Length: 312
Image 1: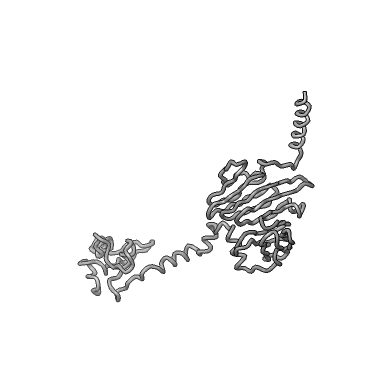
Image 2: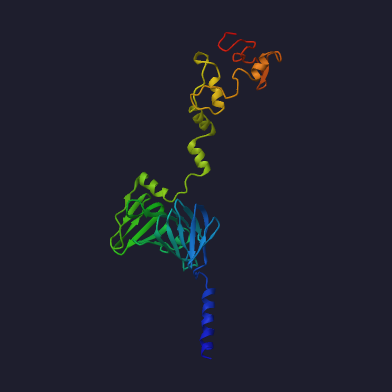
């Protein structure tokens, strides 16, 4: 009797809480993986699961990345998180119901970049990233956080503002490109300073995935540019004044080392289709790109046209 009196109300309370919108519990879906480089894993209730593109991100997940790894995932409100290598990041809480918006994340180690979504737009105080050094309030913006020079730092990459708070004070970053250093919870963040392009690039490199195929092609130029680059490393072809015409061409075409002018083993450089044609097979013309041209007999030994080096 006693157990029934307490069990029924308790079950009703659990059902009521579960039915309320915006109440998220560990294991509820909070986002999805968009991009992944190398290895990343999520831990939920001491159970690891490898992540891949399209995997769900759950409330309570402890997300970790390996060496040279990157992961980017989007939350259900449209915000985006990007983690660098050897980063440990926790999705502590995610609520999106109107009037109850709250996203609490925690960076345990490594570097991250975050771009806010609908939750921060609805409530500028609702999106926070906690660290061992302080709390980062993200207010309709893109922010970077990590360690570059032996101290934890935060930078405003885009948008309106970022508030960094410790037990000893707080600072607002309101100018894109400004950053602050946070040594500990017991010290206030440093005054905002402009980082400059070089430092911002170093920060971005900790979370960037690297050039995509199109970007890589652009970085190395067009195919024609690449072809010119390849040709520039080859040994120039020799002319009659420097030796037998085409001899270096014969070596280069068959993979000989630079400077090796010897003909391909087992191949007489003074024979071949051109010499057979010059020996009397036909009137002495051959098609080249739709045109009839005279064959080059200068390299044909003992054939009509003379020996190499002899004037025809």
